[in-house]
Amino acid sequence: MGMKNFLIFLLFLANPSIFLHQTTKFVAADQTLIQKTCRNTLYYDLCMSSLKSDPTSLTADTKGLAAIMVSIGVSNATATATYLSTQLPTSTGAAANNNRTKLLRQCSEKYGFAAEALRASLKDLAEETYDYAYMHVSAAADYANVCHDGFKGFPTVAYPAKLGRREEGLKRICRVVLGILDVLGW
Image (cartoon, rainbow, N blue to C red):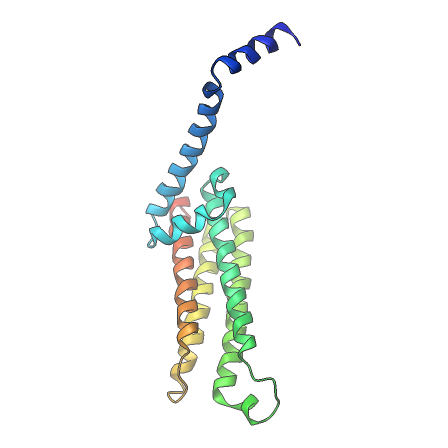
């Protein structure tokens, strides 16, 4: 061991908090970026809890935080499309052709499109074409609206409450992403 390395080793043994303090400072700075970024969104608590649930957020820049939220949106939209698919009747009889089934099938497709739009926004983020990212995220939220609006054309078919919660969740995630994109100054 060289003399320089030996002295560093002794310094560490004498006061290990010198080195640990630097790490704490680094994490605190990243936590500050997350808080600052989330303050620019409509749903601060959703933004904070979502980003805190992903350990990579501590090392991400603002663009990375947007990408994390978009990925959460992709997961939400994909899970909703899958959920809707499981609600479809398995028989090919009259139940498969009723209005409720048609609406659920259309909604599953719309949530699939929402996931695709969000995936496109990830590409836009990587290319720093924030205006296109904004457009794709807005489209994803609109696909959820289109699903809901489809039920309005059939007043005898109730809009499922569970789907309403999922719709609101996706729209809130999208609004958080749009707020972060505003920070990026698209």
